[in-house]
Length: 288
Image (cartoon, rainbow, N blue to C red):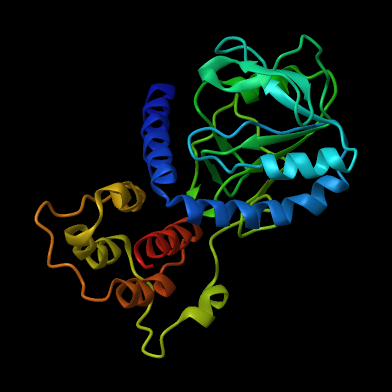
């Protein structure tokens, strides 16, 4: 991909696939993933430079409001970002539990004050991300313009779910990498991180392990799930198919009798971290 128009088109599709899959996660599963993320994030933020800018959860993003209340109770100064218009940098307003709120762009709640502060640590919600610490956002350009315009540098931490790590977001000259990225699975994704080695998933392997699955083999192995898939979970399988660059057959094979065992045999044979965790999430969503 060389032209910006091609990259924009790819990113638009990527956002649609990821957000649909994120919203399709069962609420209890998403809450558990968020709790694991907050457990990793809390000790880091206790040592971080304040003020710390959080974000208000939107379209299935990790809901960090419980951690916001805890940190505020520990005396740490917090803020929330405010977007005025698309294409313009964010400003930041102080937040504390119980403060008056109003509605901002995209109807997202923001503090109802004209006071602005400059955060020294910024938490950036991720739609998707890659191993070079580049962030796929919502396409409004808020964070990149904000970071480029800041008078003083801030520590920028991207936060998201491990299943939405992509091979690359096709970074462009205007894209600014995060200083670090945290997920529910990783305390700190280092620059240049790559997929997991076979050793990482050795404990999940079946004694009859038969080697890694390629994209076509994986798509073929997953196709039978379409037959018995609840409609509300279909975006999860669609996302995995998109990642593989494959379309599942319109007339799939009969659904497997034991979905848990079927996916349990597939997951250890997938080395791509994002796909590995996406399959684990699919399994958790389908198996009570």
